[in-house]
Length: 170
Length: 110
Image (cartoon, rainbow over all chains, first blue to last red; front, side, top):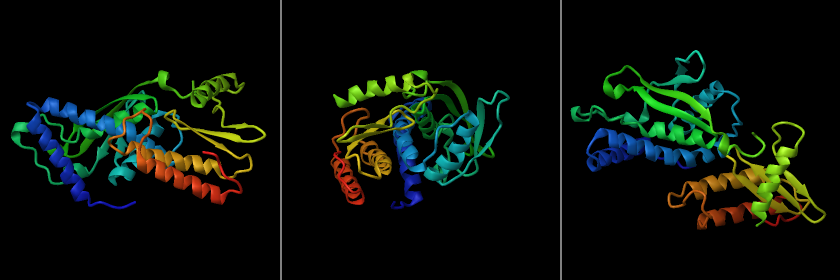
Protein backbone atom coordinates (compact mmCIF):
# COMPACT_ATOMS: atom_id res chain seq x y z
CA UNK A 1 0.00 0.00 0.00
CA UNK A 2 1.32 3.45 -0.83
CA UNK A 3 1.34 6.06 1.87
CA UNK A 4 -0.03 9.54 1.51
CA UNK A 5 0.94 12.52 3.58
CA UNK A 6 -1.50 12.73 6.44
CA UNK A 7 -1.34 16.50 6.19
CA UNK A 8 -2.64 16.35 2.65
CA UNK A 9 -5.50 14.21 3.96
CA UNK A 10 -6.23 16.72 6.72
CA UNK A 11 -6.10 19.60 4.25
CA UNK A 12 -8.36 17.79 1.79
CA UNK A 13 -10.90 17.22 4.53
CA UNK A 14 -10.65 20.88 5.51
CA UNK A 15 -11.27 21.97 1.93
CA UNK A 16 -14.31 19.73 1.80
CA UNK A 17 -15.81 21.12 4.98
CA UNK A 18 -15.20 24.75 4.06
CA UNK A 19 -16.71 24.19 0.61
CA UNK A 20 -19.79 22.71 2.28
CA UNK A 21 -19.95 25.76 4.54
CA UNK A 22 -20.01 27.94 1.43
CA UNK A 23 -22.65 25.80 -0.27
CA UNK A 24 -25.07 25.59 2.64
CA UNK A 25 -26.66 28.36 4.59
CA UNK A 26 -26.48 26.94 8.06
CA UNK A 27 -24.26 24.62 10.07
CA UNK A 28 -26.98 22.02 10.64
CA UNK A 29 -27.17 21.37 6.90
CA UNK A 30 -23.40 21.01 6.70
CA UNK A 31 -23.46 18.58 9.60
CA UNK A 32 -26.12 16.58 7.80
CA UNK A 33 -24.12 16.49 4.56
CA UNK A 34 -20.97 15.39 6.37
CA UNK A 35 -22.90 12.60 8.05
CA UNK A 36 -24.37 11.52 4.72
CA UNK A 37 -20.96 11.46 3.03
CA UNK A 38 -19.54 9.50 5.92
CA UNK A 39 -22.39 7.02 5.67
CA UNK A 40 -21.65 6.44 2.00
CA UNK A 41 -18.00 5.88 2.84
CA UNK A 42 -18.86 3.54 5.71
CA UNK A 43 -21.05 1.17 3.71
CA UNK A 44 -18.13 0.63 1.32
CA UNK A 45 -15.28 0.79 3.77
CA UNK A 46 -16.71 -2.04 5.89
CA UNK A 47 -15.96 -4.54 3.12
CA UNK A 48 -12.36 -3.39 2.92
CA UNK A 49 -12.16 -3.64 6.68
CA UNK A 50 -13.55 -7.19 6.79
CA UNK A 51 -11.50 -8.35 3.82
CA UNK A 52 -8.27 -7.10 5.33
CA UNK A 53 -8.65 -7.43 9.07
CA UNK A 54 -9.96 -11.01 9.26
CA UNK A 55 -12.15 -9.97 12.18
CA UNK A 56 -15.01 -12.37 12.85
CA UNK A 57 -18.53 -11.57 13.96
CA UNK A 58 -18.74 -9.83 17.34
CA UNK A 59 -20.78 -11.53 20.01
CA UNK A 60 -21.72 -8.43 21.96
CA UNK A 61 -21.48 -4.65 21.79
CA UNK A 62 -18.39 -4.63 24.01
CA UNK A 63 -16.52 -6.68 21.46
CA UNK A 64 -17.73 -4.32 18.74
CA UNK A 65 -16.42 -1.35 20.72
CA UNK A 66 -13.03 -3.04 21.04
CA UNK A 67 -12.80 -3.82 17.34
CA UNK A 68 -13.78 -0.26 16.38
CA UNK A 69 -11.27 1.37 18.70
CA UNK A 70 -8.32 -1.01 18.47
CA UNK A 71 -8.57 -2.32 14.91
CA UNK A 72 -10.64 0.05 12.77
CA UNK A 73 -9.44 3.43 14.09
CA UNK A 74 -5.89 2.13 14.14
CA UNK A 75 -6.15 0.91 10.56
CA UNK A 76 -7.72 3.98 9.01
CA UNK A 77 -6.74 6.94 11.19
CA UNK A 78 -3.67 5.62 12.97
CA UNK A 79 -5.08 6.34 16.41
CA UNK A 80 -6.51 4.15 19.15
CA UNK A 81 -9.30 5.90 21.03
CA UNK A 82 -10.06 4.71 24.54
CA UNK A 83 -13.42 3.23 25.40
CA UNK A 84 -15.18 4.63 28.46
CA UNK A 85 -18.48 5.62 30.03
CA UNK A 86 -20.35 2.39 29.43
CA UNK A 87 -24.05 2.67 30.17
CA UNK A 88 -25.20 0.18 32.84
CA UNK A 89 -27.14 -1.77 30.18
CA UNK A 90 -24.02 -2.09 28.05
CA UNK A 91 -25.66 -0.54 25.02
CA UNK A 92 -23.83 2.79 25.02
CA UNK A 93 -20.21 3.82 25.24
CA UNK A 94 -17.87 6.67 24.44
CA UNK A 95 -14.79 6.76 22.26
CA UNK A 96 -12.29 9.28 23.57
CA UNK A 97 -9.98 10.64 20.90
CA UNK A 98 -6.88 12.17 22.39
CA UNK A 99 -5.85 13.59 19.07
CA UNK A 100 -8.17 13.75 16.12
CA UNK A 101 -6.13 13.88 12.90
CA UNK A 102 -8.95 15.68 11.06
CA UNK A 103 -8.62 18.82 13.16
CA UNK A 104 -4.85 19.24 13.25
CA UNK A 105 -4.78 22.83 12.00
CA UNK A 106 -8.37 23.83 12.59
CA UNK A 107 -9.72 26.76 14.54
CA UNK A 108 -13.48 27.06 14.48
CA UNK A 109 -14.60 30.63 13.74
CA UNK A 110 -17.27 32.21 15.94
CA UNK A 111 -19.90 32.22 13.22
CA UNK A 112 -19.72 28.42 12.93
CA UNK A 113 -20.38 27.58 16.54
CA UNK A 114 -22.80 24.77 15.75
CA UNK A 115 -20.66 23.16 13.05
CA UNK A 116 -19.69 19.60 13.95
CA UNK A 117 -16.46 19.65 12.01
CA UNK A 118 -15.63 15.93 12.14
CA UNK A 119 -19.22 14.72 11.73
CA UNK A 120 -18.10 12.60 8.79
CA UNK A 121 -16.72 10.08 11.29
CA UNK A 122 -20.18 9.54 12.79
CA UNK A 123 -21.55 8.74 9.36
CA UNK A 124 -18.73 6.32 8.62
CA UNK A 125 -19.35 4.40 11.84
CA UNK A 126 -23.11 4.33 11.31
CA UNK A 127 -22.82 3.16 7.70
CA UNK A 128 -20.22 0.50 8.43
CA UNK A 129 -22.13 -0.98 11.35
CA UNK A 130 -25.38 -0.96 9.41
CA UNK A 131 -23.80 -3.31 6.87
CA UNK A 132 -23.04 -5.79 9.63
CA UNK A 133 -26.68 -5.58 10.72
CA UNK A 134 -26.30 -3.14 13.59
CA UNK A 135 -28.28 0.07 13.83
CA UNK A 136 -26.44 2.60 15.99
CA UNK A 137 -26.72 6.25 16.96
CA UNK A 138 -23.41 8.09 16.74
CA UNK A 139 -22.75 11.66 17.83
CA UNK A 140 -20.10 14.00 19.11
CA UNK A 141 -20.66 15.00 22.72
CA UNK A 142 -17.33 16.74 23.30
CA UNK A 143 -14.97 18.33 20.82
CA UNK A 144 -11.59 19.93 21.38
CA UNK A 145 -12.53 22.40 18.63
CA UNK A 146 -15.23 23.72 20.95
CA UNK A 147 -12.91 24.07 23.89
CA UNK A 148 -13.50 20.67 25.48
CA UNK A 149 -10.50 18.85 26.91
CA UNK A 150 -10.98 15.79 24.72
CA UNK A 151 -13.01 14.71 21.73
CA UNK A 152 -15.73 12.25 22.67
CA UNK A 153 -17.91 10.25 20.29
CA UNK A 154 -20.95 8.65 21.89
CA UNK A 155 -22.21 5.41 20.36
CA UNK A 156 -25.57 3.89 21.19
CA UNK A 157 -26.74 0.48 20.04
CA UNK A 158 -30.28 0.76 18.67
CA UNK A 159 -31.12 -2.68 17.30
CA UNK A 160 -30.04 -5.60 15.24
CA UNK A 161 -31.28 -5.25 11.68
CA UNK A 162 -32.86 -8.67 11.28
CA UNK A 163 -33.99 -8.14 7.67
CA UNK A 164 -30.46 -7.99 6.35
CA UNK A 165 -29.08 -10.93 8.27
CA UNK A 166 -27.15 -13.24 5.94
CA UNK A 167 -28.71 -16.67 5.53
CA UNK A 168 -27.72 -19.01 8.31
CA UNK A 169 -27.53 -16.31 10.98
CA UNK A 170 -31.19 -15.90 11.85
CA UNK B 1 -29.43 -17.58 -13.21
CA UNK B 2 -26.99 -19.74 -11.31
CA UNK B 3 -26.49 -17.01 -8.76
CA UNK B 4 -30.16 -16.57 -7.92
CA UNK B 5 -30.73 -20.33 -7.79
CA UNK B 6 -27.76 -20.80 -5.55
CA UNK B 7 -28.87 -17.94 -3.35
CA UNK B 8 -32.17 -19.71 -2.59
CA UNK B 9 -30.49 -23.07 -2.23
CA UNK B 10 -28.06 -21.53 0.24
CA UNK B 11 -30.89 -20.03 2.29
CA UNK B 12 -32.83 -23.32 2.31
CA UNK B 13 -29.69 -25.23 3.15
CA UNK B 14 -28.91 -23.12 6.18
CA UNK B 15 -32.50 -23.44 7.40
CA UNK B 16 -32.55 -27.22 6.98
CA UNK B 17 -29.40 -27.67 9.01
CA UNK B 18 -30.08 -29.48 12.28
CA UNK B 19 -27.45 -27.28 13.95
CA UNK B 20 -28.47 -23.72 14.71
CA UNK B 21 -26.40 -21.00 13.10
CA UNK B 22 -25.18 -23.10 10.19
CA UNK B 23 -22.85 -21.23 7.88
CA UNK B 24 -24.79 -22.40 4.84
CA UNK B 25 -23.37 -24.23 1.85
CA UNK B 26 -19.63 -23.80 1.60
CA UNK B 27 -19.08 -26.39 -1.09
CA UNK B 28 -21.09 -28.40 -3.60
CA UNK B 29 -19.30 -31.39 -5.06
CA UNK B 30 -19.93 -33.11 -8.37
CA UNK B 31 -17.90 -35.54 -10.46
CA UNK B 32 -16.64 -32.83 -12.76
CA UNK B 33 -16.44 -29.67 -10.65
CA UNK B 34 -16.74 -28.21 -7.19
CA UNK B 35 -18.71 -25.10 -6.36
CA UNK B 36 -17.14 -23.14 -3.51
CA UNK B 37 -19.00 -20.37 -1.74
CA UNK B 38 -17.77 -17.74 0.70
CA UNK B 39 -20.30 -15.51 2.44
CA UNK B 40 -19.04 -12.33 4.07
CA UNK B 41 -20.39 -10.91 7.35
CA UNK B 42 -22.25 -8.34 5.30
CA UNK B 43 -24.02 -11.12 3.40
CA UNK B 44 -22.21 -10.93 0.06
CA UNK B 45 -21.57 -14.31 -1.54
CA UNK B 46 -18.59 -15.14 -3.71
CA UNK B 47 -18.86 -18.33 -5.74
CA UNK B 48 -16.05 -20.13 -7.55
CA UNK B 49 -16.55 -23.16 -9.79
CA UNK B 50 -13.38 -25.17 -10.01
CA UNK B 51 -11.91 -28.52 -10.92
CA UNK B 52 -12.51 -30.89 -7.98
CA UNK B 53 -8.75 -31.37 -7.58
CA UNK B 54 -7.94 -27.66 -7.48
CA UNK B 55 -6.44 -26.62 -4.15
CA UNK B 56 -6.29 -23.24 -2.46
CA UNK B 57 -9.79 -22.10 -3.39
CA UNK B 58 -10.43 -20.77 0.09
CA UNK B 59 -7.60 -18.27 -0.12
CA UNK B 60 -8.65 -17.42 -3.66
CA UNK B 61 -12.12 -16.52 -2.36
CA UNK B 62 -10.62 -14.23 0.28
CA UNK B 63 -8.44 -12.67 -2.40
CA UNK B 64 -11.49 -12.03 -4.58
CA UNK B 65 -13.16 -10.33 -1.61
CA UNK B 66 -10.15 -8.01 -1.35
CA UNK B 67 -10.23 -7.30 -5.08
CA UNK B 68 -13.93 -6.52 -4.86
CA UNK B 69 -13.46 -4.13 -1.97
CA UNK B 70 -10.49 -2.48 -3.70
CA UNK B 71 -11.48 -2.14 -7.32
CA UNK B 72 -15.26 -2.04 -7.15
CA UNK B 73 -16.12 -0.40 -3.83
CA UNK B 74 -13.24 2.05 -3.69
CA UNK B 75 -13.99 3.23 -7.21
CA UNK B 76 -16.21 6.22 -6.42
CA UNK B 77 -18.05 5.81 -9.71
CA UNK B 78 -19.12 2.25 -9.01
CA UNK B 79 -22.71 2.18 -7.73
CA UNK B 80 -23.43 -0.28 -4.96
CA UNK B 81 -25.38 -3.42 -5.87
CA UNK B 82 -24.93 -2.85 -9.58
CA UNK B 83 -23.07 -5.17 -11.95
CA UNK B 84 -19.34 -4.50 -11.73
CA UNK B 85 -18.11 -2.92 -14.93
CA UNK B 86 -14.68 -1.82 -13.81
CA UNK B 87 -11.66 -2.48 -15.96
CA UNK B 88 -9.30 -2.68 -12.99
CA UNK B 89 -11.54 -5.16 -11.23
CA UNK B 90 -11.53 -7.44 -14.28
CA UNK B 91 -7.77 -7.19 -14.70
CA UNK B 92 -7.00 -7.97 -11.09
CA UNK B 93 -9.53 -10.78 -10.92
CA UNK B 94 -7.97 -12.34 -14.00
CA UNK B 95 -4.54 -12.03 -12.45
CA UNK B 96 -5.69 -13.67 -9.22
CA UNK B 97 -7.23 -16.55 -11.17
CA UNK B 98 -4.02 -17.04 -13.13
CA UNK B 99 -1.99 -17.13 -9.92
CA UNK B 100 -4.39 -19.64 -8.37
CA UNK B 101 -4.27 -21.73 -11.52
CA UNK B 102 -0.49 -21.91 -11.44
CA UNK B 103 -0.43 -22.71 -7.72
CA UNK B 104 -3.01 -25.49 -7.86
CA UNK B 105 -2.66 -28.66 -9.93
CA UNK B 106 -5.61 -27.83 -12.18
CA UNK B 107 -7.32 -24.71 -13.43
CA UNK B 108 -10.42 -23.20 -11.85
CA UNK B 109 -13.21 -22.27 -14.24
CA UNK B 110 -14.00 -18.85 -12.78
